Image (tube, rainbow, N blue to C red; front, side, top):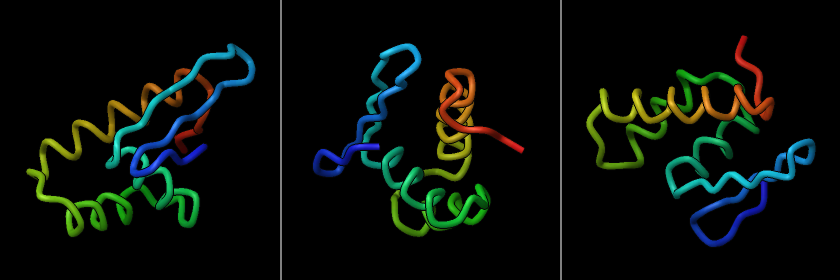
Length: 76
């Protein structure tokens, strides 16, 4: 993951495809790099951002699913 200000870019070396992350997605990945507990990261993001819990959950699941489908993260 390469930080570019508040955002980040992930390069999938296998497909040579770039994935751009907004500030929240970038922060999520930072949190997961330090601790792979998705629920802990979710709670931290709720504290840090003004977002409805259901919207944050939906967005994070969509992001993690997309990254998992690309083989960039594994969900256990």
